[in-house]
Amino acid sequence: MHTSQKVVSLRSFRESTLMETKSEVRQAESVPSEQRTEPRVTKSDRLFVQITQTADKGMIGKTSACKVLDTSAHGLRFITSEHIPAGSLLDLWVDDSSRPGKFFLSGDVRWSRTVGTASTMVGVRLQEGLATDIADWQEINES
Image (spheres, rainbow, N blue to C red):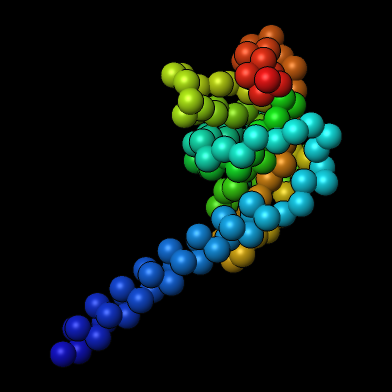
């Protein structure tokens, strides 16, 4: 009997964690779009982020799997479980579900906000670069 109480407690914990995560994503998606001057397209693509430069030297090289919330020709907004400070430079691999392959992009964090208890929403301005897929990204996101 004692064991079954622990199982119920674990199940309740998992259910409450799942509900909290869904709530955080809803909160993140409802934040006003005051930072962008371009139209955004709502997405839910997978994104891998690697920090290449930041004030906290211990974070350089850290890679995280994230979820894209929306995109534009020159930026994107995503949600992550890691705090990434404004001013950080990132390499981004966006897995666009509407086409094969990934986009390799670079950008700088313009803002970072805590959402709920376990997530951070991050706004990134994409940068031009010869070794990136920025031209293809802009072509797809401007239409």
